[in-house]
Length: 432
Image 1 (cartoon, rainbow, N blue to C red):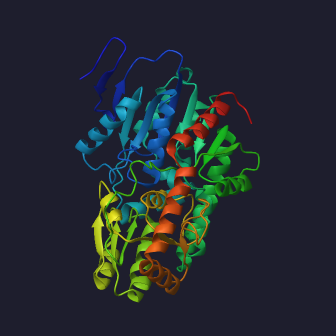
Image 2 (image 1 turned 45 degrees about the horizontal axis):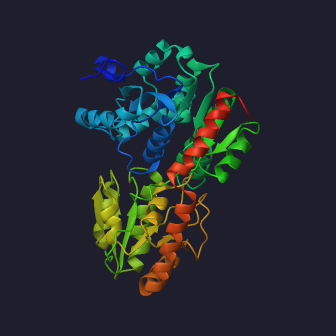
Image 3 (image 1 turned 90 degrees about the horizontal axis):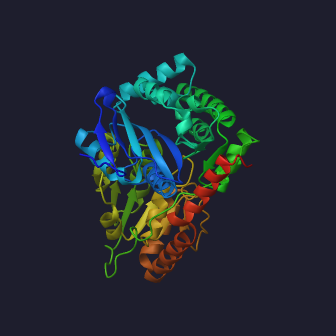
């Protein structure tokens, strides 16, 4: 169905899974081409949440043309994809979606890794290569756009079609730094060697990005410093992650269950999977009187087995994580690897949850230990901090209120929109 005469005209295209929805260009608004590696709906945490809100904020000032890949594990059915497209349509001038055949199996990951090694390129580039999307992008007329937003470095082969236009690259993390950290912690020598090789290729990709993008967006001052060590002359803007403090808010009159813990995160991501297994195998055996709920999609058999041994609940994906967080007395985040700033932390703080976390888990956010959260590194430290919080209702209240107030002061999305628009404006004007 569609509208005409100045509103919207929607069509579907069967070729290579592409779909589109058009409306005429609005007067006095610049045109933004957004190249994405997933459909940013539903905004259920992590990169999805960041990309959705940045897209929403961009659409307030730009006519946005979304060209993106769909990852089957995120939107596995045509119905889920159509629902996501419909939810995004009010924000967009038009949209094109190309579904990757990749379903996330271990065999597919190994095959892609071998192919990336053979081609001498970063895994992210190999994984995100789609001939239909590349052919479509090559047909686009660059003169129709004022600005190109590239939502991750693995999409640079698509962005190269728009040399001469101002290109802004969004860094969800500094990927080479994350891979270097992961390789340093790998116990298997062959895996460590492979991860180091990927770190070098990701750094090469980031250097290529420095030649193509006129501006770079990062999530924190720490990531800005990391990127500048790789690309010293890059124009880098901090556009933080944020949180919807009206959506994630403590419900009035709801008391949590005593001695209950929760951890939320996509459990197929290696950083979250490592944290979950660390929590289940090393921390929870020290806390037999506590219950734990793990919320997140695609938990592995290892996670489920470890959970069963300590009586923890594994929910899998939940479209709304707020009830599970509301029920818990304490949010625990024992992340030991990764980069960027974690939206799961911001969501938990906004929900008024007292937090126990590693220093790495809150990296780049700016929280003060002892005021906004309790820090722990070793299992015994986690157990001690959790018991301390659980036994002291006043301390829980003080920590929770301080954390929520910090988030409201620094990480509300609409305030972050100012930083986004300033970055775009500088790119369009080629300012440094």
